[in-house]
Image (cartoon, rainbow, N blue to C red; front, side, top):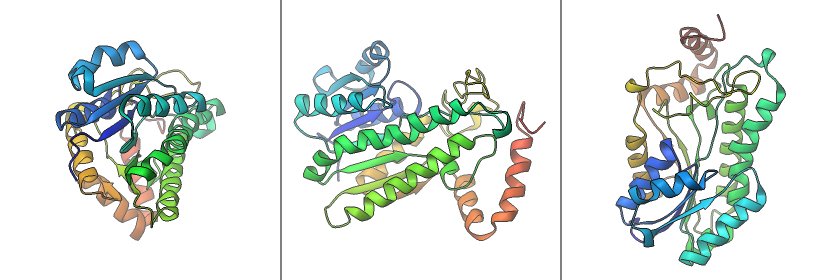
Amino acid sequence: MELKDKVIIVTGASSGIGLASARQFGSEGARVVMAARSIAKLEELAPSVAPAERVLCVQCDVTREEDCRALVEATVARFGRIDILVNNAGISMRAMFKDLDLKVIHSLMDVNFWGTVNCTKFALPYLLETKGSVVGVISIAGYSALPARTGYSASKYAIRGFLDTIRIEHLKDGLNVLVFAPGYTSSNVRNAALTADGSAQGETPLDEGKLMSAEDCAKRLSRALRHRRSQVILTPLGRATVLLHRLFPRLLDRLTYSYIAREAGSPFK
């Protein structure tokens, strides 16, 4: 399947993997709908995605059902159909659960999980018409728990369970459901990650220059969509983690603890 002339909605399209994916789809001739909370930022970035007649910017807070419904309605009004929905909008966190204000986990679930549910609910009838694809951008943390990210891991596990169920429900309807799990990818997500009191972390504990680029991640997402894959796990470390979680879970617990303990400013210290 080629992406040329396909109508693709990307949530969280103002930065990181979302923006890189919008640009990748635009370069392949797709009609791209960019959704995020800041319409001004979307409109500033839109020319880098596609010509004006092939791109639509929609202000959307995915935690709000009415915004997600309006996103779908605006897409259909402009382009007449929906072929692919990429649920990419998401936030992260970094704090031990014992220190955490519960509002942080509520925020993570509202954006990551409920955002995926809301957008999928309203786009699904149109995706069934086109025998299209719905994507959930999760994380390796949606397969194997990541300490000090309880809300993040929980939300990504929840997305995977939700989308795997949707896949089975529509097994004979021609709907493709892709669970797309990047490993550590260079983006702003760690800078914006919430701390124990809900404030932004403001810095990343990782060397972002050594991580997979958002552009490389977007190319792999495009390839997975063209081949109508149901699951993609990126990076050698990510694939090794998922395999170890299946075969040697207690060993992986110890390895993961040691890995996170070595992070700059680790909550374990």
